Length: 451
Image (cartoon, helix red, strand yellow):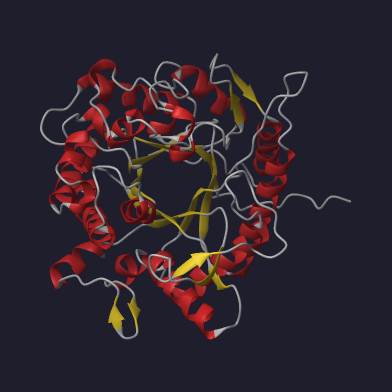
């Protein structure tokens, strides 16, 4: 007999998430400037399969259709990102009115459908002019980012209350450390980490100055780290992995300093920067897909590497499919940071092939099983004392999975990348039914108050 899906408290927010570069397309439309990812994709051998974000899901031109898909799903929250080069092509100075107007239509369309916007200021795409000046390895990018965030707050702060400064700064840092050898070559990963969290800290008070009742957070990709064996070398490797991944941003945000190993900080920052980085947060966004099972390795950047989880299957990206381990990460957060702000699950999803069958239906049953178990883990964490306020599935639509191109599919909605036709999958129908139960038994927590 199938275990019933858990029921959550009425305050819980339910949603879906996307990112601008992965879905919008219209890469040079209406005054948008080139981004670092446009340049990367247009180079020979740039992304898998020769993929680009030139069209992607064409969300820019199919906004109303995609908003209606969200409304039909029954979510009360939508996490999206703004494309920096779409609204400020040079990364400073002139703003692009037509780009800004697109996000006005997006925000207003959400509110008209009783869906609350959650705006991510930066989800990895920045103007090529910023990249040419050094990207996040250049300290000035932190100041430019804060100016950009303030400009968005001035424009949308009357309607958008929930803001995320950065998405997965760890991934941005890792791109510096492990990126392809072609130009531009930079290996300043820890410097990048410093400037990212500095830019976050500079942006927070400027957002607050223009957003009444603001809820401001950051989204971190956290894993939960375990050693592959009980050998001392692997145990030490797991401690390094925890410091350089799960704690690298949490510690400066919540404790005012970078994590320490062997009595020394992994990254030095002055008193003034540490104070800026520790700007008070209203929530911490958690992106979770799989745990980190690590072993010592001389070839690893920090002396470790991820290894397979024994007995676990893997998804299309090779990540272990062990949703039952989500609870371990949430418990680690609760133990390690007693003063942790409330948590929003800002991404959680499953990568599959998801091809339509002979009838055109997409029966993505592995995704349903994965999401269902993850939600049981979230409910158990709530019962154990974690303060978790919301959950967002990654993703609404199949989309461009960055370096991996279009083959891995994360969406609740299938996208035919030839015709751009949208087809809700079995997981879309399951999530809609799940939310119906929450609406009925959770006393309509899907429609939070606005204002």
